[in-house]
Length: 35
Image 1 (cartoon, rainbow, N blue to C red):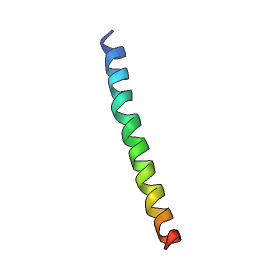
Image 2: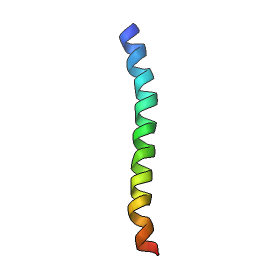
Image 3: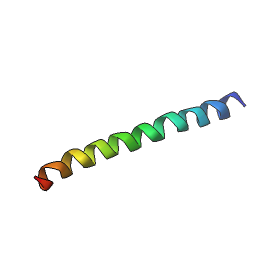
Image 4: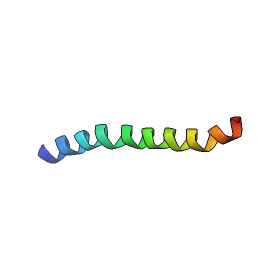
């Protein structure tokens, strides 16, 4: 039960962070192309 809680808690933290990092990198690499 504790491990399941930790797993879901980590999921909610790690996945949005990965999405944020991916969006930052994609914006960083796309931005010079626009200019």
